[in-house]
Length: 153
Image (tube, rainbow, N blue to C red; front, side, top):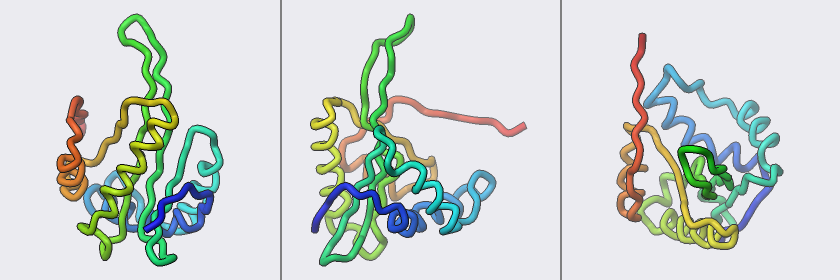
């Protein structure tokens, strides 16, 4: 298995489909159906921005997953202290490669990226009904510290 940074937005758009399909199946009122051309264009716009990092996971030269990361700077204000974090927007391993250690190895790589970028906090969020993500991040020791709720009117 090899993990490396990538700027291949077309491949990231392809790898994004299972994540997007999951989001759409759980919350069709919030998410559009997956459209490769739209996803490709969005990732094309994002992939070379300095604060975004895209990681590619390959096994035997086959792409099996990816992560979309962002370096976030939170300035100090009257209410909070300043801090810097590595935010995980998306992390996905193809279903045929899950439960084989790929996700854990990718997270370990993300920890090393965080240290390299001089951050001591990794943040992420996932949709409430995403049990796959909930189990995975709980296994890795992530702690829930904030909940977001909403009410439809």
